[in-house]
Length: 290
Image 1 (cartoon, rainbow, N blue to C red):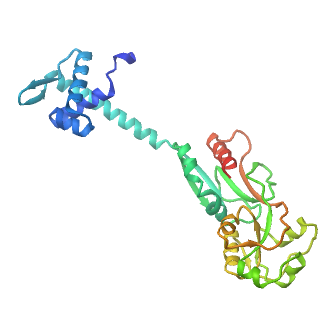
Image 2 (cartoon, rainbow, N blue to C red):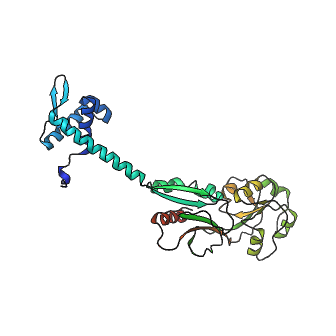
Image 3 (cartoon, helix red, strand yellow):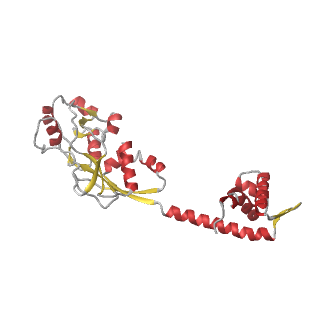
């Protein structure tokens, strides 16, 4: 039989009763609950009045449980144990969201923002799988995949995370010692190359299609590319959003004015059909926060 809500004693009164019984007095119970002894006494009198039972015998030497109080204490402790068990079960059922993403995206864009998502969604636990990306290559199975590519992923639900532009970058020291005023000047400097973002992408975007240069160091991670450029070892091509931290710190500077829209970018992928609400909420948050 379900009890009406008004017949259930207040939780603070039950806590005061349990603490006083366990600790042997109102004063130690008050210390544990961070209230006054008179507050504990008042809560227990309210409980006794609601139950129609005397739970404690009050004597000059202190208080002790009555027989009714001892029986009631068993019920209260059983109820508290059930609440604790239920809370633990709920915590164990927190939803896990598996996300795979490229390392530079993870370091530069996601990690500074992730605490905000977890504050908004305390019921979610995230497993991040950082993978070295290749253009349009699928990662391990995940609820949400962040991929670098052109957005063409047959059989997947796809959302663009943001638009970006291409920038040609070098360290201030390298820019000051090399003349780079037009695209043709790039033929005379050290070009740092990334498999993820070929130089032909930038040349094609500015209307000057050229084959991919065959000289210069090749890196398979955009973060490494930018670090090498910031060390003064050559000129790099990257997107402005990914390079933002290096630009803001003054470690890299644009060396050419042309900054066309990037045909490649970051995309969030899920399975087609009714996706998990948590995965959709994560992607919505990504689009909103980036």
